[in-house]
Length: 106
Image 1 (cartoon, rainbow, N blue to C red):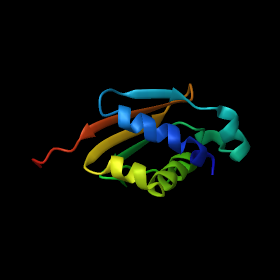
Image 2 (cartoon, rainbow, N blue to C red; image 1 turned 60 degrees about the vertical axis):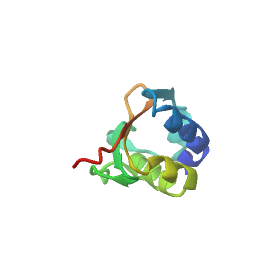
Image 3 (tube, helix red, strand yellow; image 1 turned 45 degrees about the vertical axis):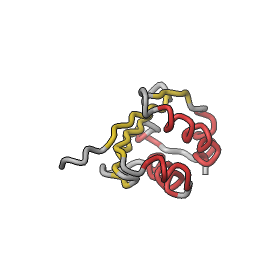
């Protein structure tokens, strides 16, 4: 799984995203060699609340793979607890991570 090699970088950026939005460029060849994603491409938004996906990612294999990788990493799961996190990849292949604390007042 392509995302596994990015987990250390994602972990670091997740920590930093508590202060400000984080962006880093992905290596497109890593993903192209992992398999053809066709027209859907590699762009996606993954919204997480308390470590659970809150948006529909069924149409994006790349987002589903990332979500599975995140759930398998204990340190990342701890970073996602009690937080609302948006992870997205745009056309320019930059992954961005934006974190908000979940308000206790619902």
